[in-house]
Amino acid sequence: MKVNVDLKAGFLESLKREVLAALTPEERAVIEVSTGEMGNKPDAVKLGWLKMRTGDIWTKQRYTRALKKTMDKLKAAAAREGGKE
Image (cartoon, rainbow, N blue to C red; front, side, top):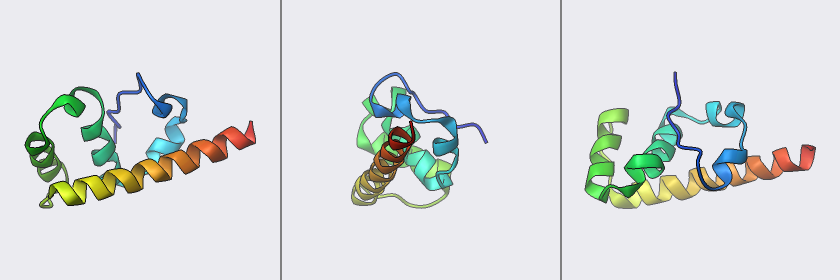
């Protein structure tokens, strides 16, 4: 499965592809919708895209929580990767 993540800005660019590939499909969808072109869309569009992508109904609260959880997970992975180098 191809991960379409815009790595132009932020700490995501420092993560290795293996870290992003280890995310669950839901976490990948949340990252994809929050970055790149989708990051500039209204929340209703993001929630609709998430519903199409995952097949589940999404609320703004669920999206916000999932994004925070995923970003915390990626920050921890970035810290671990940074400590190895």
